[in-house]
Image (cartoon, rainbow, N blue to C red):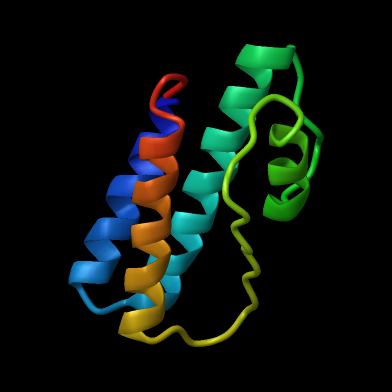
Length: 100
């Protein structure tokens, strides 16, 4: 959980500095860590993967949620794309606040 929060702060820092590729990377890492934390806490394990879609699929076994498509490629990110990623992260945290 602590690492997830650190990655989240880093994503916000890089976003404010207009470094969108690193902000996007840190948002992705934040999602992975939050998802793995919830899975470990609720079912005692998490898949050894970095695929956010696989982690969300596992999460769907314990809680129904809105479909969130998360694909990240090595490329440049625009400010608006990263802003949307951060917004999705905030909605995710609100949806799963009972765990995190």
